[in-house]
Image 1: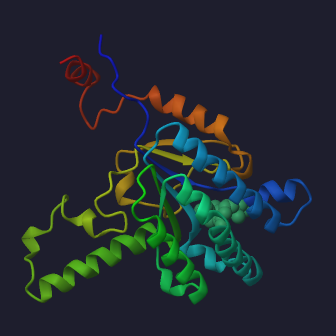
Image 2 (image 1 turned 135 degrees about the vertical axis):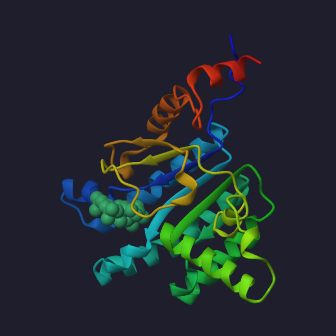
Length: 247
Ligand code: IPE
Ligand code: IPE
Ligand code: MG
């Protein structure tokens, strides 16, 4: 009988959805929901550390979220800024390396500076890699990478033939990090909403009705238990997978 070395995912990607509905159901403002959402993220980061997860990529603000009412957008920017300033020391203390992915030039310059400071402060930490995706879109990421590569080919720095499935993702925002093993979306919707697209090719997809502010350690454990039951085949047969584990 094969012994699983580990069934804990190395990399989890989360769409933290449902803050607005959580608040509306309580007769509160969407702002309150987003604030509770930050609290949930703090808990999940701590729990992920306890469970030995190495990389956590969370979707905080999509390229499409700019279409929300101006007031909500600016509230989200303020919340991002304040939470970063409030949490960065604790993250650092816990050995978390903070990274941001997305088009950061669209953010207020104060926020860009805070992000850069947090990235610099935590760069040598290795307990957990926390990657926050904001003003991020999977399609934007892919197009950006294509543009980069096309530029290199045009300048004669590489040939078109050199571009293959191994080289291409190195030009995406997550670069050479391993693809997510487990994707979690809270809030009941079963869609990817333009989150990391290239990297989800073989990710296990977990959807839960729990709204993000309610998603805490015990719910993450449920997702981990579900993940542990999956057999990742990458196109092979179950028998082949079992045989390679027995070997
Ligand atoms: C997710 O919660 C947070 C962001 C998209 C910023 P929502 O704000 O989308 O919450 P619902 O989906 O409206 O409940
Ligand atoms: C996805 O949630 C983006 C984030 C959680 C940041 P949305 O609430 O924006 O997604 P849709 O619009 O329901 O697909
Ligand atoms: Mg939503």
